[in-house]
Image 1 (spheres, rainbow, N blue to C red):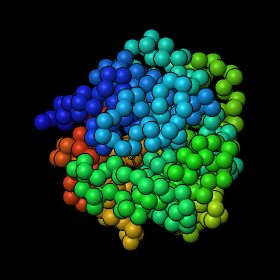
Image 2 (image 1 turned 60 degrees about the vertical axis):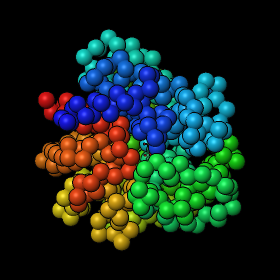
Image 3 (image 1 turned 60 degrees about the horizontal axis):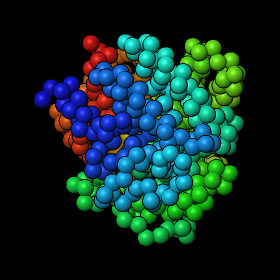
Length: 421
Ligand code: GLC
């Protein structure tokens, strides 16, 4: 089947009317950054529906401004990881209690700029801009634990849930909070070798139960036993702050412009902390250890997406990226292929992810590395064309891994197809 037809049919099958599920079995609710990427892809199919995707996410926004990483619009009969497990009191719709990489303002700006229906885009932007601003303000106010940078309190907030970067910080946390739980990924026809081990999962759940016990209270979580300045999340927010500034300027929202400018300036000043001269790379930083996490992942290329890589460091980033690309057939692997922790088939430990490729390619173009960006887009479309819309892919063989019929893979394939035509 041609890639466009295939991608559209995946998005249609995962469409629940007002929102899209990432996958109907493994992820049968609305996820935050998934829906951001999905909305971009939907712009090619139905602009009104694309805007609705973001609007549905915002239904889950908390009074303090947080946009949660899962919105449970409808219960699911068999999925154990649902609203009742999270146990969040919300006036409109059940949600999870944490967030995910804040890409929404970036997505909304791209939607505004590419919309054929500018009137609708303007109406939706006016409707959404206060929610976006409140979301960014929540991040800066409640997660701003280091000058200009924000902290992440659970691997699930990073979006790169099973990254080897989290092994060490998770292993230090006593398993005091762990309660009995059921793994959701068992029995969904996903090969378990591609998923986290039981021990890794216990680590995630232990921290989850700690957060739930504390009612996800933003003040209490400042003392969370997992406090990371996550490189990818910070890059996503810095980029999104810049895009939100652009959106606020379009609407002449002087009340927003000054605070956003301050956030950007502070982050720019604080960002140097994430550079490790020893690794010649930007890395995440463990606040409890007071040290960089010495595992290089695909997050190390995202300072280009954020547009905040120092000129003298851009060359190092591109050198590392090129070296990784030369070691695999399909780029970009999620972990350094030379690292002993690299696993070519396992969730966030080696395979390539289409959404991260989209972010890396976007950043490369900003810095003028169009040929490298083209190569990444070509690899991404090649793996989708040969395998279908999988959740992630083996970087040597292209084999599709994780969940099949995966929405953001379909959406970004459509986006690239559309922007290239
Ligand atoms: C996994 C991924 C996360 C994604 C979610 C839904 O948990 O790690 O990034 O948002 O699945 O697709």
